[in-house]
Every structure is written in structure tokens, then in C-alpha cells.
Amino acid sequence: MKLLVIEDELKLSEYLRKGLSEEGYVVDVAHTGIDGLHMATEADYDLLVLDGMLPGIDGLAVLAALRQSKQTPVLMLTARGQVEDRVRGLQGGADDYLVKPFAFSELVARIQVLLRRVGGARGNGEPTSLKMADLEVDLIRRKATRAGQRLELTAKEFNLLSLLLRRQGEVLSRTELAEQVWDMNFDSETNVVEVAVRRLRSKLDQPFERPLLHTVRGMGYVLEVRQS
Ligand code: CA
Image 1 (cartoon, rainbow, N blue to C red):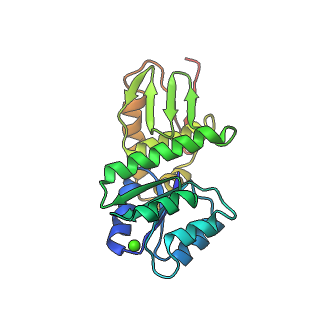
Image 2: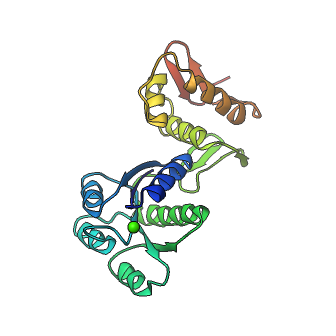
């Protein structure tokens, strides 16, 4: 899931970028309405976090311009007491709003609700959950279960599992996993992928009879059901 945060306050935008990345989202940040509008129009984001008060063109103007071409879900941030702005935001096509200052956990909860709502309405769009054998991953609630038991995964482990599951049966190299999950160019000296795979495996496979995550020597990893 890819998010765009449009917020001019550097401290807040950095806090959001860091926090939402830790939650497992891929996050881009724009510091002006112009930049944000350009990025939101050019690229496909799953959701925008849009501040109302921006220098140059403000949040409402960004929203109005965006809605001419895109229906990306928008969560607006508004200052306390600006009821009028909020009403105009919702009328202008914002999907939800949050009043500053807000608790980070509430922001995350609102984002999840919005993504779920949109995912459900989208119908034939991207799947919101993935399954293989007794493994089930809910991409919106970011919850993984095996045989009905919840797997306690970190954000990176969850992303790793989702990617392997989305491309089940396909061998994915360490380089590809590093690029897709960690957003980094792979340095062959780094064993971050191996470490994460080992941790994921201890949660995903160890407690269960049949392993799903397999190492293909010299090539990478694959998630698949194998005959024993
Ligand atoms: Ca602002």
C-alpha cells in the first residue's frame, strides 16, 4: 500500500513518514500543495493524507484539482475548530478528516478503515485478502492467520509474507525481496533478508506440521504447498 502525505510542517511530515513506514506502508511526502498535486496526479497512490493549511495552494484547492482526474481516497487534516473547512472538505470530495493534534494510532485506524471501505467498493480491483492452504492474509487489516491462529508479525515480516503469497509458487531472489520489501538496492554482504526470512519462518512454519516457505538453494525463496 502506497501513501502520499502532503504536509508543509517538516517535523510532522517526517513523523508521519517514519511512523507510517513502520506500519508497513510505502510513504512519499510532499511539502507544498503544488508538489503534492503533481505527485498525486502522476503516480497511483492508495491513499492521500492531505493537510488543509498549505502555503500556495491549500488543501481544499489540491483536493478540487485532484478530483477532476482521480478518485484516490483522501484523509484531510484540519486545525481544531475549523468546522467550515471540514464541511467544505467533505463536500469537496475528502473521504474523512482528522482534527489536529491527533493521536498517531487514530490516524492509522482511520487509514485502515478508508482503505478497507475503498477496497470493498472497488470490487474487481486488487484483492484485499490472500489465501494459500490454511494461511490467510488480510491486506487491509494487516493480519495474518494460519489454521485460524494469528501470526504476530512485524511490519516488514508482514510485507515479506504478503509479497511471497501474492506471487506464490514463484521463486523470489534475495535481491528482489530486498528491493520490494526494504526499498533498498541490495548489497550482497547484507543478510537482512535471510534474517527476516528466518524470523518469518519461525512464526509461519515452525508451529505447524507442513512448511510453506521454502529455500531454493542459490536462487531465493518460494511460498508454496509441497507434497510431503
Ligand atoms: Ca500545514
